[in-house]
Image (cartoon, rainbow, N blue to C red; front, side, top):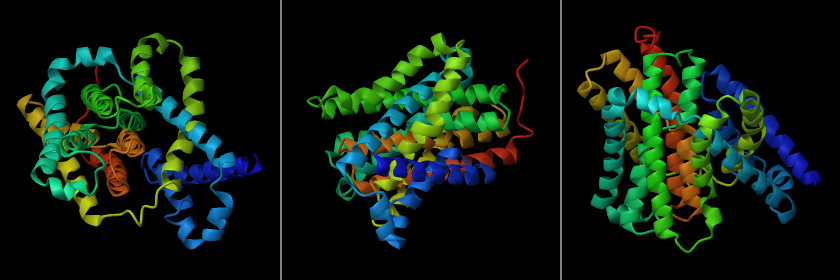
Length: 348
């Protein structure tokens, strides 16, 4: 118990420092939490001070069991909160304005990931634990989703949640996330039809949040307490654990990371721009929407971590997907700020 309390204290205090630094640098706080895990894990602390790392985060059932249990609770609660951010009303209200942005913003990166595996199956097989076709579908889904919670946080920080652009971004991101996670759910069911139902609890939790959103919208106090417990305790434990359990140096593949990053950014940004131009939107608004939807953030990391746990991918691809999610989340804020001032039209 003492070791568990020590681990939690070190993890949460380090996460607080990194979250503070992330806010000061105008980056999503999720980036700070992931980096705090990388700092405490085998990548940095385990390499520079292996004795300290092994003494604090010694692998034992007594400490690792409860810590992983709390990390899983954090995963479930975070996905539930992400589901609560989905607004079916916004999807209906902005359907006509965002249909092309949503479809092309999802279809182009999905097609790029799918085509890349089909054209070079032998090269991609070294990063996969499954056959080429389901792996190609997974990679397409991983490149096509957006980070709905991160996007919402960025828009709230910039005080533009009441703008037309925010409605379009949230609606399009909602559509992309729902389709991407649905594809991932079908893929898991197809490849793991014999596994225990607990493997699908995270996906069920997300959909439970979507369904519960209309009923909890007026229960502000309940949502506030749930959000505080999740975002300041349980969720950080999960995201820190990602860094604790993975060596990002030994599993880093520069060619793979570059390939994933280029496909993700080119597919999402170009797809959204094409959709905006077809819809005859204002140029600056199109770029703001494209940069916002390019952020993969926590949702991309969650999908990658679940794929690793389900033995769909190997650690080098997991590291590449996490790096892509972090880089796109970091770039989203500064890119939006460069064009935002002249692009806002507040809904009245």
